[in-house]
Length: 185
Image (cartoon, rainbow, N blue to C red; front, side, top):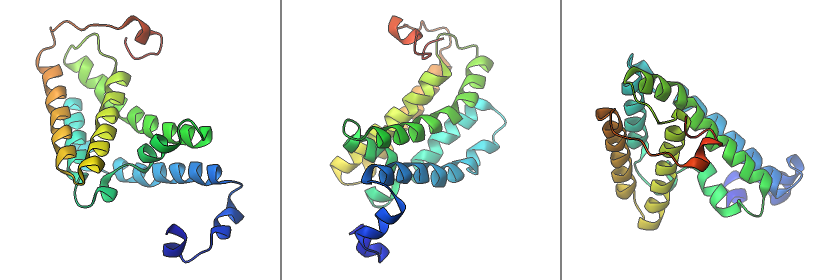
């Protein structure tokens, strides 16, 4: 289907790539470049307050969830679900895409945590959690055949972040094994 839509033969792809795995890794890298540009220029960066930037990022992600499921889901997330144990190069490229996107959220999350006196939460962990919720929301949308459940999931993510910052004195439980991975400060 892809070859027909592009007007090329299967052999044309492999003229440029050594293997299907190399093609898949290149596709994940390309996805990161294209979506990276979208997020670098997104309006959520305009807020002065770091918490408002984080919340506006979540709102932006929610706004992007519209139309056909294939129009708003994540290519890297889909690819890694299908190939994680069979194609390490694709898995690694997808990891770089998803974790790389999360890393771009860390400075705003870290600044918001500091500004609001929140202790016991690592910016890296919360940034990765946003991606876990989004990827899970995309899976649910695929299973349900439409965007509604993904929109609801992102709404829950926003409320979760709001609640984290509304009660800074709430005790934070640490999982001992997470400290060594840099997920808990």
